[in-house]
View 1 (cartoon, helix red, strand yellow):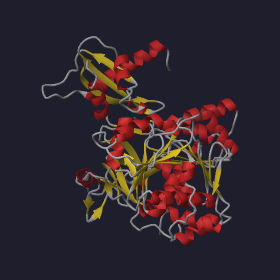
View 2 (view 1 turned 120 degrees about the horizontal axis):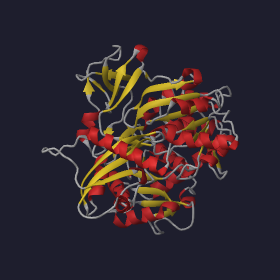
View 3 (view 1 turned 180 degrees about the horizontal axis):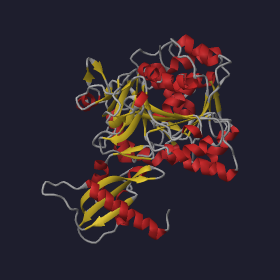
View 4 (view 1 turned 45 degrees about the vertical axis):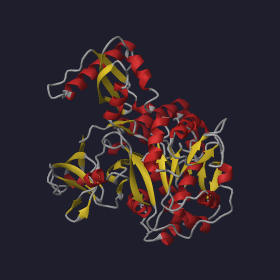
Length: 541
């Protein structure tokens, strides 16, 4: 039935003054202005030689310019590729090389990272500089444009984007190296029918004309979404795109860090009706800030989260603020949603995840068992799916197997089947650490630790944490005198902050078997005990 950008263009024509995006500094874009700036940016990118299929890297936190750039790309068939703004210069070089980005959109505040990466990059992308502070990111020159100049051209968007227009969303790979999941934009749009329409009790329209009519219908609830997790997370991005598709407004915090007090003020002042959080990691500071300010979040009617722990007591605190629906999704970048735990009040807690229509459970022989109560299997989806991973045919074949003549995605989540399509989540089959909604793979962290001259051996695991779900913890074997603090200082410039171990134990040796294997279960228990003893000494709860 089309894609997001087509609906936005239709809304701009039908109701041009409707507010699409509002920033924390009070700047706002109507749908007409949102479309105007996207058209201007698209024209500038084309003037710089970009064509459909070329990539634009978006190194950006939640700012209106992110959404404008995303719109410009979707509407023209240029591929937007959001990157994690917490990465270091060396990591940015790797991602620019992997995506072969022809352009990079980045704010001045990330100038050191961008400048360092551009000095090392094999080819220099066109740089679009977004002002958010003093200085100029990456300097100026013929391949550098200030944002205000980039959106200035008077232009129109194409009547329709190419049918095969893509967007890329980077996710972790099994070796810790990020991989881009390649979505056809129309397929991602189709995969969002539940999140866009069903959760609001709205009938899903059959085409773009119907979607535009529903968006501008006075009887359609006006959604005002405040994403408090970054757009680089699939849920924050897709819920924001879907909000615009409903003719709603997206609020942006314009900050790379969570300011819980400012978030509460914005939610109240802008009358937000929907929050996007990353489980307890975001929710707890926001709830504490609301309590401290004596504020009730009673205009919020829905809260979305996915990918990390969202405890029942945290949900209970939200439900105490008023009537709201909490949608806790089990979802992945590679396959959209698999299951949802939805609660409408404290009486529904703790809630149980329930399979979405497109999801199935497979046993070890890939036979469907979602209707067999008590069966244990692996989650899969056969709905709209990405094309696969950019540049990795082997991993694409593993993750997107063809079963019974139909393509599935099997990301690695194990569950037990309960009655009426409900599930008990058992865990991931891989060693991924999910900390605050960010994926961390141990091998990358271990390589950084091993680059310290005194470190002989290293192992990285996830430990449970009440706020972040898990934290990154490590044990290292060293030769000669050194300290945990010195090792952590060494890896600081090598790893994004969320990848850096929060707990590190230094030993003379790690007890490996003759085959080189470690007893990870025992090591994890030892690290948990050590961390607990340390927190008790520090008086940390």
